[in-house]
Image 1: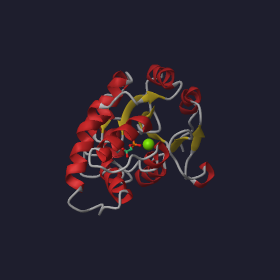
Image 2: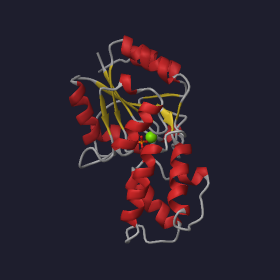
Image 3: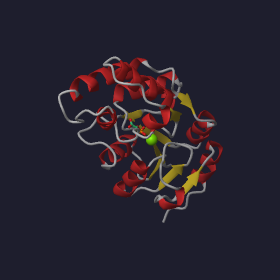
Length: 218
Ligand SMILES: O=C(O)COP(=O)(O)O
Ligand SMILES: [Mg+2]
């Protein structure tokens, strides 16, 4: 049976409220103004170093200057304990249950750092589905490099894999990895669905098991 590799933020969980809280805690602790949720959400998808660079740039600071390291350390520490603002998208548990019953092996490949990713996954109760969880700092590379997705598939030991994600970075990762991409349309993408490379799109997790079951491989 197929392996399914999932993105996390904007795909399985709506983590924008948690990331918003953490980002504002880091900023306001240093006297910078808080940002609104939409602004912070637009910084999500390329990993924590990118998020920190965006926060610094937005605050009028050099994104690669001496403030980067302390802000990054502060953000990752707070990220691990600030789990309340992570909620499952509707139908995720039911869909994962159905996929597991179909014999799918499942992994998470997220650009969120590994420890905060594990904390968020435990908070929403999804850890039982994922024997493999890779974060943005688990390997030397992160998405859109295909390494994370290839490593997840290898660890699951399946010949065939589908990649499920919500963002432009995920679409690019799937192309780079040579895997079919299933686009969850309700996450944090900025591009219209029709402009993103994908093999299938869904807005409701109740559709995912049937989509996978009926997948026609070349
Ligand atoms: O931390 C991020 O930037 C996004 O994480 P994701 O890869 O799960 O969307
Ligand atoms: Mg995402």
